[in-house]
Length: 613
Image (cartoon, rainbow, N blue to C red; front, top):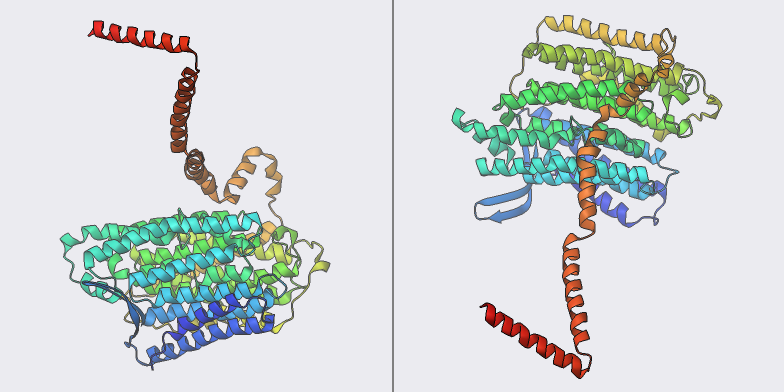
């Protein structure tokens, strides 16, 4: 029996049910229902994961129904399970399940309990459609579903102005890139006469060199279509503002759903990008700029969730860089490892914020390692994995594979910048950890530790998977991508260099923010230092530039059209007619002398006209 549809069906049913029974069930039953639907989806994923592991080359398909049939155009709503989609599904449903369990504790005393679980169920369902779809149009349905869910969840506390403003900003910026994506999809149909991924892959192998030129436009549109969703330069500004949503939402967006969609789509269509090396170079260039700008910005942030948001931006940049050097498997493996330790960090950050009375500023926390030892360990392991701490963490193995593939590809400048940004990652990550857990004590008597199984179990599982144990997880990516570069003994040298940089960044952050061997604060009296700090704090001024050249112009034009200039023109005509009518009515006043005078004037006018002509 083919039950692929269970992966999407149950989260959808959960969404429909939970969104219609708000206030009619207890919170316990609501959370149990929300968790159960994702659990069924995860178990179904495990079944197909075992089958694919047992039969390496097996692919599972399931046609649900015929969506559209016009002459030769036939589009099915059908699912396709291979090694890539099952790897993504393990991340989506696995992390989704743990986030739902954690959320049953996190959202317990907050408003919109049923609405929250309904939205997150729809989020998981949309993302599973995205990775299971066997054609572009069906995939695009899940793609847009993810955008709608992100809008609803980022603006979950919609009564606050900043929240719905951030949700609207995320929605608009991702819509900009989605326009290019749909254009790319239509261009693909024009060239291949099909939307099906496998058919396009088969047909692309027969392209001759002279037919490849227009593929540059197709892959360029696909690239622009994914950079918005995955928060890459220059459409990255929405991600840091998206932190206004609940922390479990941030964990979902950053680890299991939205930002991973762009990496997945390029990996899924890698056979098109292989034919366009120029676009692959553009991917490398955009990704290295994103890594650098995000790493610098993270170093200046005070908000714990914004620091983690910029780190996500940077790590997604590493994945795009791996895609640009054709290290497809390395990109997907790091995507999954990043999803695990970033979920750990965001959920731990959510717990930390609650424990500290909703305080998010890391410099208003301090000395919490004794009050919150469990969260301290979580941050050490999650942060260590983020900075690729050697041997002990899973991030070390996945990130070093990317760095080695960059080196093997011969892009030395990109390699040096990515190494430097690894150092910056260690610097800003342990700046956050040292300040929070080792810094000056800021009234820690108000700190309330959490001792709940629904809080501890997800974090413990993520904690174990973020260690070296996570590196032993095997991903069924065989026969999905062409062979990448063969590893050799030089990788050991790279691992040593990478380890030295990570450890150096940790030590430097300790001396700067704990030992205070160099005080940055004393230089803030200079105005230009304050301006530099403000510039990086606000993400290199991208929002300022966008406001000047796009937002303000749009608002100006909107203001003009809000007064309806066409209506004004019609009003002027109406006023002219009204004035003429007023004076014509004056002429009908009942006086005989006025009528005689008018007749004489009219006769004279006629005689003058006759004489002139």
